[in-house]
Length: 275
Image 1 (cartoon, rainbow, N blue to C red):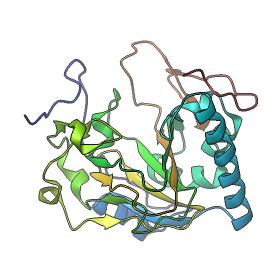
Image 2 (image 1 turned 90 degrees about the vertical axis):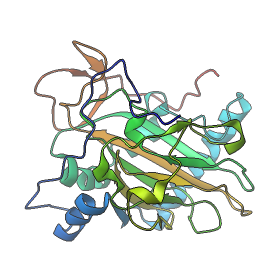
Image 3 (image 1 turned 180 degrees about the horizontal axis):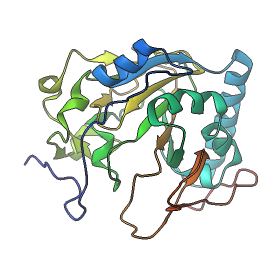
Image 4 (image 1 turned 120 degrees about the vertical axis):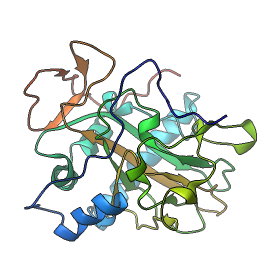
């Protein structure tokens, strides 16, 4: 049965709010137009080869510790609150410069997630919209996908449906066990909602940007190489959760004029949370 209200217990504004930025400082005007019309910008060069290798080493060490503690390759979710390395990536000035051109000068984040598909991983990410999962309103979240490894057609690239973000909430179904979906929602007829699918093939150290309403997914990793990316989510401070008076989040740039978002402590070291 198709579902059109992902969070019926919460009143939300689920629609695309076009970027109105006549003078972007990092992105180009064409990239702003593409984000509005197609829902994404990809790829953007951010990290040097040396930094990219350091990002990979950091993840290699962290995932080894995580698996030793009983976690799996998708478990490093929201660990920016525990791990200084993820916190630092979330606050990288070059990334924030790109996001500011889309979101504005005040940037709040509450979400990060490593998506690491091991070689031969049979799991997929079924077609979905990010906003369907999140108790946030209005739907103004921009996701940065940072490539930790090179991404090509063989190891399961994230693939998007251009223009699908313009349809608001797209009906979905709860995923079946047979799908081996990393998440829990599945849009069954993705081509109905936009243009031809576009795979995000990227070099390690590059990023993509997409709106929380863009329909996207990824196939299993059928290669002998890992495919890891880190998602970093940003939104303007006027976005609200279910919490009435205040909520926790990092103000990554600028300020929150209303004081709704209360900052969390900066993590010291890299702590692996208990499973």
